[in-house]
Image 1: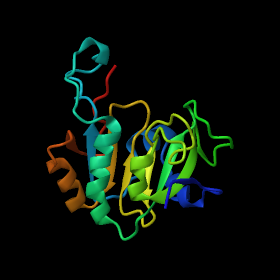
Image 2: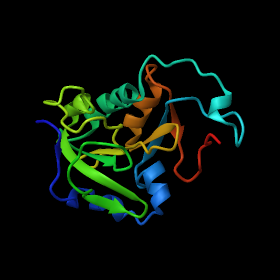
Image 3: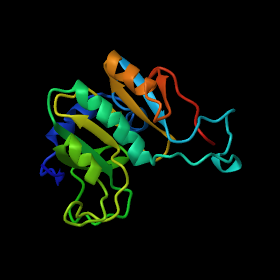
Image 4: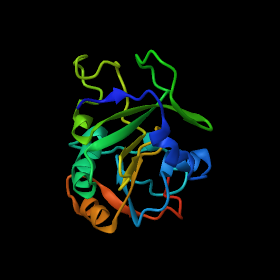
Length: 192
């Protein structure tokens, strides 16, 4: 199976039904999972208002896409289906010739479906594998059974993952990525 653009968006309706403010859903993801983690692409700031461009960071061995890929590999053990959905924010310059098919206030997305293993082809330079040109990482990824959800908005320095306890414990314990436990009731630190 390869990733394909969905013709309709009913598979994403559950996100709209969360009833969350758009910014909360877009940045922190859906509520209701037993446990949460944040995969940090750069470390958290040391103090409120700190600017990311005022700090030098060691280059991570893995790109953001690869770090999310590590988390997805771990999460693949915690779903009953290989079928997944991927939402891409329309704010990027992409070669998708159709209107967005999933929307909530202040964010429009294209909804795709494919196998979880197809994430490796996301934004591939081979147009036979990825015909949409440059595309940032998906803003949302979830399996058809909604056993977990990865939320990766354009603004924060992290991706948020909601899943069952064991899955989150596996992600936080994995030394290849910088993952920390997260509490969706409290805002994490943000770069100024």
